[in-house]
Length: 123
Ligand SMILES: [Zn+2]
Image (cartoon, rainbow, N blue to C red; front, side):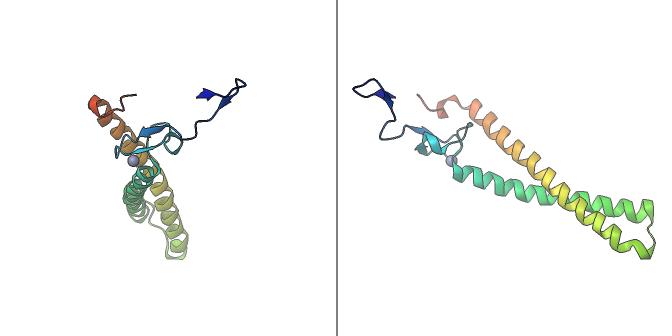
């Protein structure tokens, strides 16, 4: 940051660029998050985490359905309510698994980057 003639600090006309740690493209520093990920890489990571989330959610829902069918043995009158429980378990499980998968993707990418010091920005 430089100062004008009166000593006030002014923003640079061209924002400083930084390198995204995932795709290694240069972006204005403002567009990268605190882990130096660009918005495109964040979106792709969220999409990947979303797939893993649904996979985990369906697994949790299937396990819940199995437990209800074999362990609780609901009567036919309450089948609709139990179906709702399984649907809710699947939905909540997918949300939880998505967040876990997103954290793992972020952590693993950061670990890969730390193992390759030459890929870090020189500044
Ligand atoms: Zn990127």
